[in-house]
Image (cartoon, rainbow, N blue to C red; front, side, top):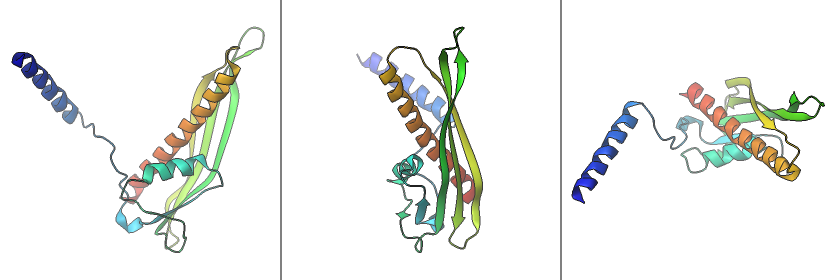
Length: 166
C-alpha cells in the first residue's frame, strides 16, 4: 500500500512540475491598480455584461461604486447587440444552423476625463444548430449561449483593462 501511495505522490509531483513549467496559473482576483478604485460601471438598463462584470469583480480587491463623484475610473458599456443570421440550409431551404453574434461596445474613462481605454467593439460569434426537434430546448440553449457571451465579453473587457492600466 505504501508503494502505491509513493507512486501516486510521485505522479502528482510530476504533474505539478509540468503545470508550473508551462506557465499556467489560476485566474484568482482581478488585478486593477488601486489608484483606479472605486470603479463605476455605466451600462444600459438590464445589461447582461454589467451583471457579468459585477459578478467577476465581487470578491476581488476592486471596489465598485454607483456614485460618479467617487469613481476613479468609469467603465462605460455603450451598447450590446444580439443578432443572428442563417449559416446553413438544406436542399428544401430549411434552416439547419444559425450564426449568433453578440456585439459589445465599451470604453473606460479616468476621473480626470482622460480616456484610459478607447472605444472598442467586441464581436463574439458562435454557430447554433437548428434541428426540427425540441424547439423549446433550442430556445433555452440559445438563451444560454447569449448568457455565455455576456460572461465572455466581461472577461475580455477586464483583460483589456488590466493590460492598459498596468
